[in-house]
Length: 165
Image (cartoon, rainbow, N blue to C red; front, side):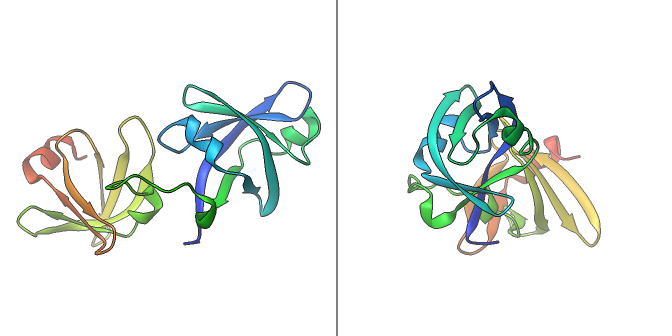
């Protein structure tokens, strides 16, 4: 859905009071503090506490009172409404906005369309063209520019060829 963002994945329950440990899919786990409510499996939860820890965070949600309730959330995606998301700094974007963008070289040659992005320290992109998939990491110097309005990602062809699989 275009009006939602997947912001985390539930890893496991933490303790006996219903707290959950999540893997943040944002730039930093600290970013999760900007959300007052989240949705898991379509159910809305008010966020009571966020404790960032590295690239993970511990969340306390209203309605998740014990370890048994928290265990039922293991492996689920934590989703937020786009309208609830904090404003982004200039020249930054949500990865979901890059899905569907056409990848072109600096000379305008189309390499394919982005069909999947795996968030990591260096994000991993999968593009598809004529049924063929190519994977590349967004290492330094690979992506020259991203225009989510025009749905175009420009890559440095030489650098792209060095990292593409």
